Length: 379
Image (tube, rainbow, N blue to C red; front, side, top):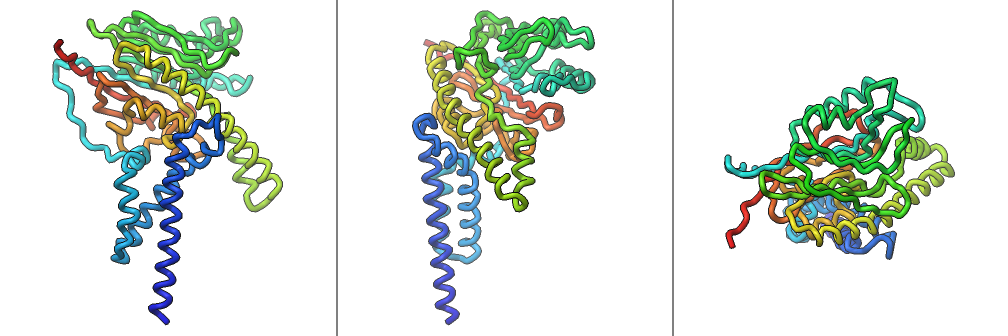
C-alpha cells in the first residue's frame, strides 16, 4: 500500500512538473507575439517569472528525492538560462577597462516631476529640492530623465531645474517638452551631458502630445561619437490606490474585487498593446544610427514582455551583463518590478551597473551603468 501511494504521489508531482514546463514554453512563445495582434499573450508572458520559480522548486524537490526526474526541470533551466538571467543575474565580476579606455557613465531616472505636484496639488518643495540636488551631484557623465519638470517662472521656489542641473554643473542639455505652460512649467524627457551634444532629435510615438516619447543626442567623446537615447514608453496607468483597492477587496467584497481586477487588467492590456507599437518604432530608428548607442529609460514593462524581448534580440541589457540581484526599480505597491533598463549596442561594453536604492523620493529608483567604448578595428 505504501509503495502504491508513493507511486501515485510521484506521478502527480511529475504531471504538475510537466504542466509547469508547458507553462514556461507557452510564456516564452508569448513573448514573441505582438500584443496588438493577440493581447492575451501579454498576460501569459507576464506570468512567466512564476513558472520559472516553480520549475526551480521542482528541481530542488526531485534532487531531494534523488529522482531521475530532476533532469526535466534541469533541462528547462539549461535551455532557458537566458530567461533565468533576466530574472536574477549572477553578477559575475567584469573586467575593468584599461586606463586609456574611453568610458561613459549613464544614469537614468523617472523623476515623477520631482514630486512638485500630485495631480494639481503642489507638494512640499523640500522633497523636490533634495531630489534635484541628488541628480545634479551624481557623478554620471549623462543623465536620462523621464517625467522631467522645469518651471523657470516659478515664484514660490527655484524650479528652474534645467539651470540647477545643467548650467550650474557645466552640462549641455536637450529637453523635449510634451506640455508647456508659463504658469505650470514644462514636462517631458531630458538628456544632460558633460560631453558636447553635436546632434539631437525626437521620436514621437503618437500624433497627439504625449509624455511617452524618446529623444536622442549624439555626444562627442573626444573625437568618438556615441548616441544616447532617453525613452519613456507607455505608462501602465495603474495608480497606487488601484492596487490598494484590489488588495482591500480580496475576501471582503467579491463584486468590488472583480471590478477593481477588471480595471487593472484593462490598463495592463492597453499598455501591452501601445508599447508593442512603440518598441517597433525604436527598433526602426536604431537601424539608422551610425554610432554605438545606449538606450536608457522607463519602459513600463518587465523583462518577460514583448517590449523587452524585442530589444534583447538586438541589444545587450546592462543589468543582465553587469548587475546582480533582483534589480527592482519600481518604488511602489507592486514589489520586485524591474521596469527601468539600459540597453546598449555593439561597440560598447558594460562593466558596472547599480540600482540606487538610497534615493527613494520618486516612484522609481535611479539606475546607472558604466560602459567602455571598444576600440575601432583598424581597416
